[in-house]
Amino acid sequence: MKKLALVCHRSAKLSFVFEAAQAAGIELVLIYDTTESAPAQLPAVTSTWQLPVFDEPQVALEAFAAGVEERGIGGVMTVREEAIIWTALAAKKIGTPGIAPEVAALARNKYLMRQAFAEAGLRSPGFRYIDNPEDLSQVHALGLPLVIKPLSGWSSTGVMLARSAEELPGLIKAVWDVQSKDLARFYDQNKAVGLVVEQYLPGKEFVVECFVDIEGVHVLAVGDKGQPEGPWFEETIYRQRRDIDDPLIVALCEAAREGVKALGITMGAAHVELRLDARQQPYVIEIGARIGGSGVSHFVVEQSTGVSFAKLCMTAALGLPTPALPDVLPAARVAANYIIPLRGDGRFSGFSGLDKVEQHPETARVVTFFEAGHISPPPPAFGGYPGFIFSVHASDEAANAYHQWLDDTLSIIWNQ
Ligand code: ADP
Ligand code: CA
Image 1 (cartoon, protein in one colour):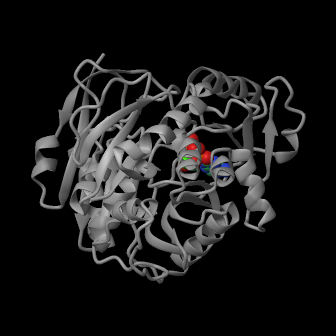
Image 2 (image 1 turned 30 degrees about the vertical axis):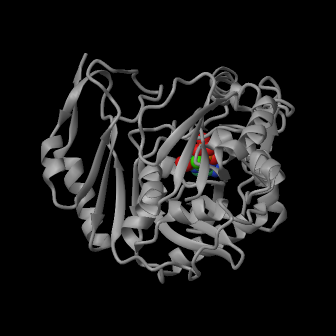
């Protein structure tokens, strides 16, 4: 049996990737950072290995290379956005398949990524790089509204919408603060920090899950991500689209493929986020060189197509052959994820209707993150994600109906 090092994935609640490894008969060595405690028992994980991945990446790389043989490790992979560059360097160092570290660096920097898309001729919103929050002279030419984002963030952390010229300077400072406080530790130490400011795309949001092999870019699933409108862009839904011949879905797949090629991702997963403009034209927002959503993308692909996305990625990282895939994988069923909306703030005391949700035949899994007593701050601060409801349906219509039913059935009980 081959052993794979999985870097810094520790969500025991979102355990899809661990379960997929177990089903595929792949043993995992779970690498965890020095600031983290030893992970709990997880499926497929036969040993753990603590390395200073984030604070001393070079030291961690040397230790990894020195210990790989003794541990019988045949490949390395991550689903953690912050660990993508380290994982690419680690694969290169031990001579197993991975994306080039230069490609990983592009995928971790929103300004370089935007430049790569624009240079490759992809449709692109106007964008600027800001390295000084006091100097906004570059930004005025872009017009309004604008989206402000940390250079190397993830999960929409600190991403904000500015509607007016008056609020822009304050919001730029706020995003700058989030970057310095919460994200700096995960930045490439040799590179400058900064923000990207870009024109707001007002249309719907989508995701295209891709797997890249020697044949090229394969689309494994397309998902509707709702229409987050700011001021924070928290996640709302993920509802797969099974109508892959619809002209819009075809255009989204085409744009996603071009984006993956523009970055130079040559193997493994690519989680491509797109958004439509006012004329319904798709734009690539960003690409994660990993399975999306800590394994949520694996759930969607596997439940709808029967293909284990995580197994494909792990097999490729181990240097083993993967099966031939079509350009677009047809979906027999529709998988979905519903992010329980906050609809309030204050002290969380529980969910109302969760028992009904658990009993619904189309519900696949319920994962909750809030514990009783959790405090969610009022807007505009981001209140957090209370939980996810995963489901599987016979049709796009059934998935829509189920999410409407959740809107009516499930709510949070807040105590002030
Ligand atoms: P992160 O890496 O933090 O997820 P993204 O660039 O993906 O950063 O932005 C987070 C979210 O912000 C997106 O999912 C989208 O909802 C919104 N967003 C980002 N850029 C734009 C844009 N140009 N127009 C409209 N919405 C955007
Ligand atoms: Ca994103």
